[in-house]
Image (spheres, rainbow, N blue to C red):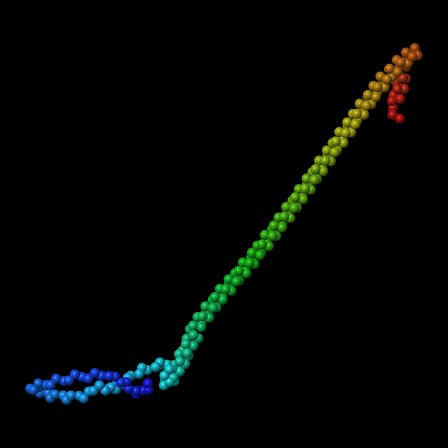
Length: 210
């Protein structure tokens, strides 16, 4: 409905005014000619959103710019340095953690390299000690074997000498015995006594190896 429009409403007729008493100083009111006709009643319209009111656009835009500039200054001078400080501190901590991790990794690699070198040196020393012990044992065994061989050779030579002596003595005894037997046989065959020495020498010559 357009501005200034009127709204009609049905109003009930008022009750008639009772007649005033005769001795009342106030004259009676005349009866109002009220009928059942519609009475015009003005209706108030509510205003719309203030920010959509075109009459205040200039002020709104001005204060919007003022608010944005104030917000920018606050962020620029207060919030941004704090945020930058927090980010720099966090970046510093992250860099410190990364550097610490890299240093720890380097130290662990150095420790591992040292451990491997120590292990390799220990293995080399163990191999050298084992080789030295093996050589020493071999040399000792060789020396013992050489001494034992010399002892055995000496014992063998002694035994062979004893055997040769025993054989020589046995052969001498055999020759003497054979000479005696042969002389007795010759004496019995010829009837004449035989020289024992000659027969013994003949037997010894016969027993000598060719």
